[in-house]
Length: 359
Ligand SMILES: [Mg+2]
Image (cartoon, rainbow, N blue to C red; front, side, top):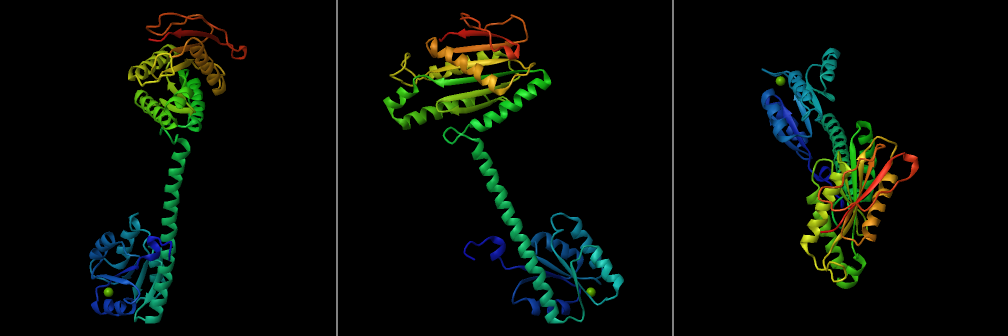
């Protein structure tokens, strides 16, 4: 086969377990041309060889001193590692009761002594064909599952930066909002945008632009590692971070930390106010006690981001959604509050914008 799989190409192995060497000899002569043959002279050795060699089929004598064939079969069928290997009993006993006993303990078939070569060969061929198909199917299924896992990861990851993509971000934001509401917990969302990124691309080229985004992706990944935190590439030069169990003030501090980290890296950017690559950031956060949805969350964070841009870039603007009171604390170290605004009435929430100016 050109597109060969392991199951297709491999020569199949048969284990013969029989206490009479003459019987092993007969079976060996019938089967050696087409198959690799292993043998054991008692049940205990037989079980050991099954575990070590993983044969494709077992020809098992019933009458043996020590462990008989039924016991051996029962042991093999009880172990998940060996349960699927087909067992054919080879026996002089032919009454119905014995046959039923053998089949009940998990054997797939019977051949009777004295051996008729054509019958043994035909039965063995049939069962090994079936075994090969089953192995092939299992192998292909495993490959398919592996591919699906890879695709699933690719579909949820941003190709350039390796952090979550928009799709994963959307899924996680939805589920985190629901979870926070169910548990009466806070949730924050950070959205940031590289300042004058178009100019950066124009000045340094798109490869440098990609490098800049990769660096920001790495910075986000390193900065937001706490369980549940999800940094994501939201699109273009926009990034987002979901922060479970985080109120707006803490979210703003986290955002400020990120803003400062990037500014301190001092990546040259001749087209920006600071002469280095900077980000403008919007944060929205608070207790999830009302019917807020992802759309609302993103809109508010976008609006805060817009304020950061409008107020001179390289800064964080945070919006706290509070449950009907005016108590809003500016993020620690925030020198000024640039104002508050009321948000859409349908949520019934009061929103406060606190701008934290740049360093
Ligand atoms: Mg025997």
